[in-house]
Image (cartoon, rainbow over all chains, first blue to last red):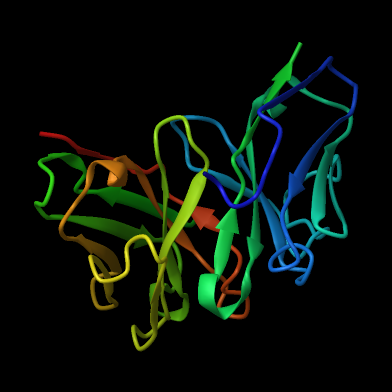
Amino acid sequence: QSALTQPRSVSGSPGQSVAISCTGTDSDIGNYDFVSWYQHHPGEAPRFIIFDVNKRPSGVPDRFFGSKSGNTATLTISGLQPEDEADYFCCSYAGINTLYVFGSGTKVTVL
Amino acid sequence: QVRLVESGGGVVQPERSLRLSCAASGFNFNHYPMHWVRQAPGKGLEWVAIISYDGSEKYYSASVRGRFYISRDNSRNILNLQMNSLRPDDTALYFCARAPNSAWHDFDSWGPGTLVTVSS
């Protein structure tokens, strides 16, 4: 069982927006602003798309937006494109004993 | 261009050992901490281990501590994961990933993974 809870799937039409939640606890998301997000097309290497809750690495389009409220982080993808169809995972720092926890993953389907 | 390529996966019997490797290229390998992360079939990602840029610090998840050992050879740009006393629940796709030296909690480049199946 993954430490962070994500919806199993979300879907949207091209051009629409989708939001993926990532729920943790006071020991991880709620206590640190070290939330990151990864896009994974199965069979390929995962891609780093958000760090420190809401920062984008170079080359990641601004359609990808990260946020956090309490123990829940959210990835919003606006202007959905066919290539956005993939699995998305969140991750949070969880302190010196556990270190890093990942989410269960969300499959985004572009209708 | 950063490139990470894992190897060494395969089918192994319970209680046996397996050694995974990750070949790095396109960056100064000896400047970066490195992670192993795994994904069991149909499941989410699970962090496994991290090693500092010079190999002096190593940390493990509770599920593998005492059975798995992370190491690196900076002269050959290779990251390793020695996996001992393997169990069926270690079956997973194993990824190596790079961390920025100032942000060990990020995984900024990944390989495509190597599959480990533990089964009798």
